[in-house]
Length: 240
Ligand code: COA
Image (cartoon, rainbow, N blue to C red; front, side, top):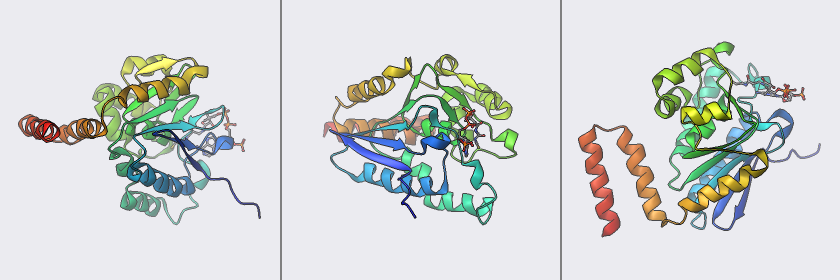
């Protein structure tokens, strides 16, 4: 039996880790195997001292990721167990907690968990052909990669509810207007534009970047006074 290619590729370009979702034949649908391989790759990105930032991209022409692999629905012991494993290993917590800038470069279809993976990154850049959507509700599911929590925080609750409940697909210009992506660029310039944005961030020293990420992430869960105190402490620790 021929060996299956990896579902996630890791390539280092200087101090940037380029992580590629690599199931182009099925629009990089997120499978159980991809979950396990992404876990290994993201831990390597987090722990490698030579890696200062991460670019997340999808292989192939059709899109970044068309969501959960629909062919696996019903094949796992149960949807409940599959989800339990997901939470126990907390893949999404791992992605969210990487203390280095993470940028998602989005082209073509970016649906369901594909959109959620992008939302777990710090910054998103879209190609002009990108198509976004959250189809879970229409499939009788609820998003399980953070969509119900991340989209309201990124887009505001009103817009997020509309998109989560209707499953409406929307394009790159709408994504820009909603604040989901920072930039829309021609498809041919996507990786260069996302890399340039990441490189701009990497002009700052790594401890400053990690502290800013921590202040924003941890502060969001705190009352304002406690969050301001956290910011003060992080600022003091950097200037010390
Ligand atoms: N899971 C498994 N396979 C998927 C998939 C998914 N989420 N999305 C696409 N594929 C597969 C298709 O079955 C097809 O396989 P085939 O070539 O063996 O027939 C291949 O990827 C290409 O998809 P296709 O539908 O032919 O391309 P398209 O350009 O007409 O449409 C999509 C692309 C993404 C719009 C469409 O495939 C789609 O709606 N996918 C499902 C999206 C979804 O509901 N995701 C789940 C979220 S919970």
